[in-house]
Image (cartoon, rainbow, N blue to C red; front, side, top):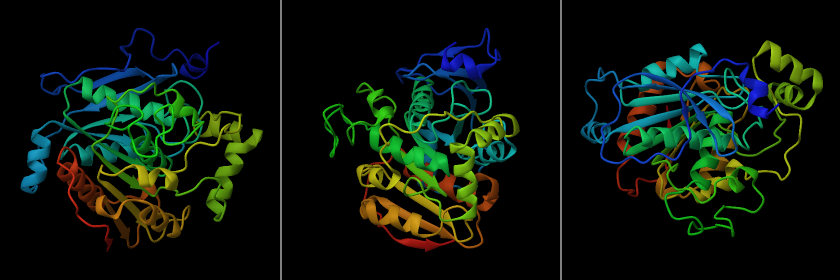
Length: 337
């Protein structure tokens, strides 16, 4: 049985399969909600949903309105144990849809997607499939917004799937990657139709193997111990791969300097129980200050479950203002929310 079939549970027989490498062409973005099953470069089936912009976001600034008019889509990357059907992810999608069309999807091993979670490694391929789908639907600009594990994925995706031809990105290895041996990057095959135009990382870790908080020690137990994986599978609908990373993938903080000139927004709460504030500050220090912003939000906890609507509105406004716009130096400052 294939890895995809092991997790799919027969839920998508007869459904649409999108093979990935679509071309934007001249057609307008779709105005119809869609539910489909994408196929990643390594053959995993990914549950995905497309929600058109609802047009209710009156009062957006002129730059954001122009970006939305050019056909912006925001692709949402959820956190560990999430899925596109979780209430918190649906809430994010509903807020973002006031500003742009939105694609949500479930990472491999989560919800109705196939395969098993690699906790941030090959999930880059899942995000790439969702971005390619957005472009195949006619979107000329795509922003990615990730939460927690999804935040690490959008950072790595932006570094590994660049708009330049494979091998021309600064820091690129012989295979066009930002570092040798990254298993997700070996699957990329030089494709450039999956690049993002703006990146938002919310509650993201800066480095791997962090165990400095009780919450993260529980996460590592769920990932590394057979009993933890069993609880995750049946209690949280999250199927985790039993193999360790080999090789260790490019970390978020290693990816951060490779993202420019794509605009990057790092958002973190001062009450995050998983990753303390040295994580966002490490990402800021590593990234190009000319293209990076950091928001430290007072009273905000962790990821999509804790994100208030007002913060989500500001994130969507930032994404619509930046995506599709020619990069410019807007500083690397820190703002308190």
